[in-house]
Image (cartoon, rainbow, N blue to C red):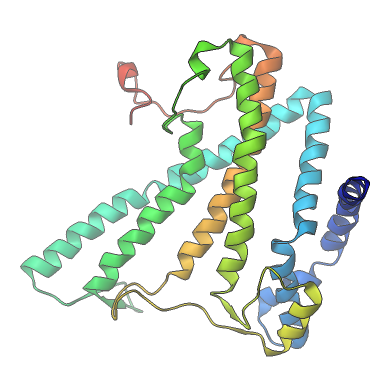
Length: 303
């Protein structure tokens, strides 16, 4: 038990060291962005892969959360500022990626017309450098639009109050009890599930982008050794011969989804705490929700 406590607080202390080193030595983990021209670039990519799903990275993020929370307890306006920024991020991304729904509908209409009326086997799109693909490719790409909406609009829907909620106790308890339930839910359910999804999704993503394939069980030294044979090997295999071949994009969406849910878990915890502390008058403070306009109040929350 004592060893676990020492390990925990040691990692929190080392988080400041690790963060400082990462900020002051960006080339050691970001030089691969300019290309995998040399061994140093390949090793930098392997460091990026390792630390992105590492205990060190988790404790760095966790320590930043603790520091911001401590400052926010001292000055509540700082915590409100974090809420506004994180909810603004969720709203901004959600409102942008929601347009994928329109693209999905328009593309499906084009596919139906080209396939049923013009009996075309291929659709070309673009000017100059034309993207020409089989109709089945465009049809399967609709799954990607749907995945974008689900992954990138999940936290936006949360801010807007659009997720389905099974309510057995919540409506019957007092206002302050509701806020305690929200805080506990953020810390024990929302954020831990996002962390687990990230940990599995991170290495799942990179195993479909590079070879030799990294493993979550590989230590940093082993990954650095693998860097000698490192090269890009982006997944381009589809479910059908002429179908959509960009399934690695779904792995990127999975990791993005986990990161956004974790960040919004922080925002929801901060908002719940502040509304608990400041009372019912602060409920919905700075909350930016979409509206259908005057006279449409009966339909709010159903769109």
